[in-house]
Amino acid sequence: MPKEFSRSSRVAEQVRRELAELIQLEVKDPRVGLVTLTDVEISPDYAHAKVFFTSLKGESGVSEVLAGLRAASGFLRRELGRRIRIHTLPELHFAYDRSVEQGDRLSRLIDEAVKSDHDTSSDDI
Image 1 (tube, rainbow, N blue to C red):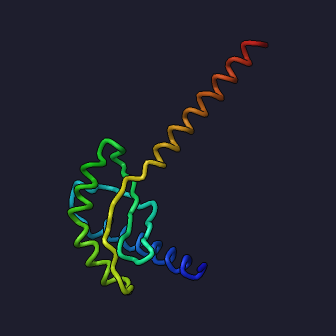
Image 2: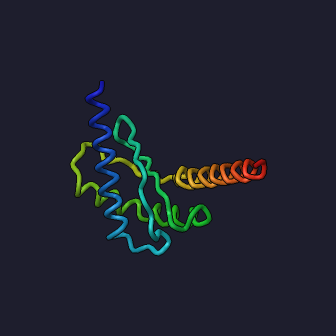
Image 3: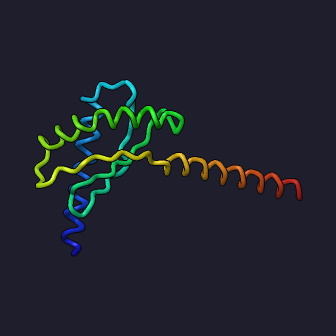
């Protein structure tokens, strides 16, 4: 079983790398803009790939970026088929990755709490 997992993760990583390059260099849709692919999850039968992305437009521009990526998905899938050799070429499903924004928000909250705690302890002296 570990062998299958490692092959699946290698394929997912290769799909992520190839799609990132294709989106950066070949997709001309202005809705897509600058996106970063954070992860790819491939179903066990390789029929579906969930592609997670972040965007400089932030959460407010997600629907626009998603529309651009969905419009380009046929082209991306076709080009992916030319670049990698796997028996089943996965259908691409794009999903916005909120983890980067959530991590940033949590980091700010922690910084504020530490500063508040520091200010409170300074007042006690």
